[in-house]
Image (cartoon, rainbow, N blue to C red; front, side):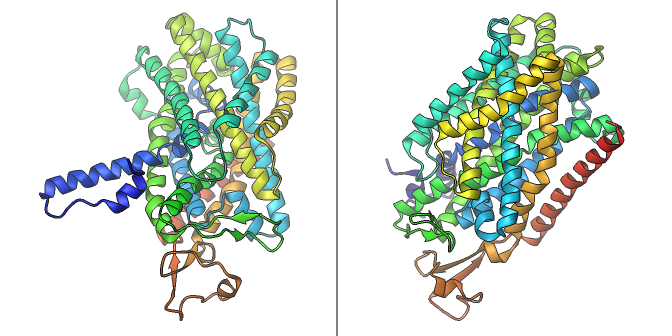
Length: 507
């Protein structure tokens, strides 16, 4: 059976067929091609349902019941939009965000963003270390201590070594890896669907009212928790993922259609063999819509539902109970077990374990993109995993040993607030690159091949007077560009307000 991409291009519905059958065949081909793209969006959605999200959503539900569901909704809209920009960036340029910064920005700026990117990876991994360890402790009835749980969490790198390939085409091993991650995400989704079915004394109207803005959102503590939700939802390392996971299918398209050209040097200081793949115009136009649609659907059906479900379960179970705001993940586990049954508590712990396990894998992949793209530091996955995990285990164990479960919960929520503060730094280049014609213009020949020879690219007006060359400007539409700037400003203002309130001691 031919590959879906090739099948879509070479087989079109015969015009002699009735209109309804032609429409049916067209829909079938679109769905079949869409299935070929399923995978990266699921991997990206994992970043939005890691243990840090659990802590942020549980604290928000325990403190404000359903009123912060509006922030969950708004954060997911921002996440979908920024991921669409990342996919656009990676598809048009053939480079992930880190590589774009190294190639096109001053060296000092590249290093500054790199430091923030690594800080985001470590903050993310702290939440995953603690969340996975807590889940193992709860599922084993306290037989697995936190330190042992942290050590066990490193086993996820085995799956990266077996299946994941960062560069190259979308091979069978890569597909298996993507489907494995999708299975973990679906497992989390099923766990929370079952938990929602066990809730009582909660009306649909109460829940949906939480998706509307509330005056309590501008209170000091509410802003703190809103920023933790924002940081947990629109995670900085996910922006690297979104821009880097799209190349495999683009390359596969070009290989199948004989459009693959020799890779170009990324800059004048490139080491031998340090090349960048440049997708053809046909590959870009054929893949970008499906890639954005797949990511959007994955985030809406998985990440948004799970984040909302966590907050709803916490709001329905913990709100109004003294001390529940600091109950944390163990607190909601015990409360669910006592009020709704032990099986519901185990489901919560199982979902937490699946989230921590899958998020740890994705965090490792993002970490590789950050260090390879920014500073060309190529490191094996297991080495990257050990390095990041060592940097995150030490502060996690210090907090757990000195402050106990209350300190763990504060560390989890605090790590998500740190991600929110880092977010404006990482998201600004995404918006900037995608609205500039300088980076989003493609020069190609009549066959659709990219032209990147120094003689051609040296002229900013290349292709305008040469009939053999074609210039295609793929920058964002002005409306979407303005929206992107407004999203970035909103995120920045929220964090500035948070830092001001923290400085005044009002959170």
